Length: 513
Image (cartoon, rainbow, N blue to C red; front, side, top):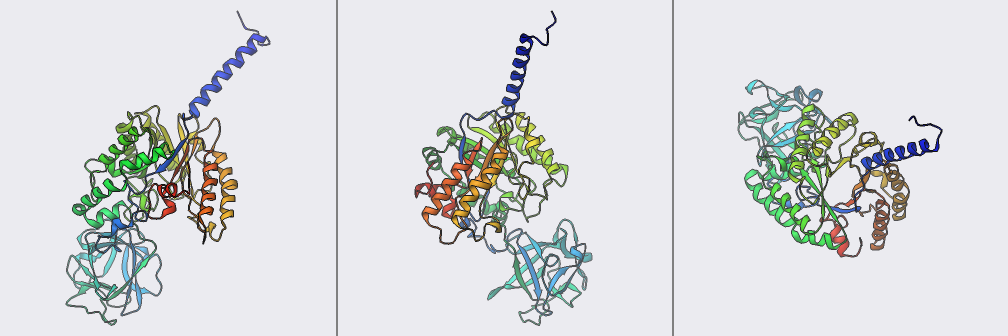
């Protein structure tokens, strides 16, 4: 019998079918968690950040000369800076009156006092043609070797006054003229200004203090014990008990790619995977969920300490290999923890930086990373982080829509850009209720991916702000970020800076969950 399209029965059947389809689309898109996550980040634990735990670097010799440190060298004889002509792929001169990009070199640390110098265009300073007498210093090597390795010898009375000795010929770098720099000064150069082998070493920008810096700074042998001691004491089982009794129900754990890799690649040291296993066990013991977040992929996605970078160069997405290697890491973590009752979500990558990481690159990675998680878990949420510095907070919505259990992660700080300078406490609070709330609302819909404020903190860039100011600021964020459909995570549980430490904030009455 053919249905009459004008009959009430047909209309009812059509409505039922459409309702069923809408329900299926809604379930597939949102699949809300049974409980909104109120989490804390365990930052500075398995991925080192020196500003969180500065004492971790205390026993490193030449701790101001770690990997990625940017230095400039001024010849005392000429009063000019060493310069990589054309930014690289050419000679080194001593002819710059002012120091800028071409005069700035990134250190690759080889030992306590031996280094390689990376120039603006990513080549390394070395001895031309094997370094015979009078051979110029050039920046042409794309990967450094012995000819590109130098010893920095510091003046005991003035450590920024240095000699630079070439490892390959045991002779000192000298600026023979403003246009010619060689490594053929024999004997003792002395420390007089007139010596052509004396340079003043200036530091540029902020130094990196991440996992690469701490492990390579100590050297693999010493680093193994230092890191094991840190892992065993910085976060302990009692912290998980505290988290649970404080009203939180989850932890977000930043991890690095080396944790999932066996054998662990130097200079990173083995052991963090066992610690991560322990964290999952503690989470199960105290009824907590784990949000596993890849903070440091094999190739840096931003210039931060937490990206595992050696020198601040962003390489994630530069080739397909960088994407494939990162997917492999997600696959390893997903396979290992998919059966854990505590696993709630996998964050595919933390804070990729725009425009260095393009939206097209990120979309290709997120699609492959999502598939890697799904090969092992149909239930774990997959978190896609918004790009740092992107002006379009909704740019990931088309990618995440239609995929099961997807979450978009945003990070909200009121102090990491100059835009918040000179604001009052009330202006900061108003910004939370107005701008942050509005942006979060655009990301939170009934049929799209879930929203997650994966990092926030009750710290203010306000002079003389008092305890009540911090309490009001924290309450405003708890109220607004509580509207995120997936939840939020405070940065971080422990920190030498008290307002960044949720444990300190709770114990001292600033925050109540």
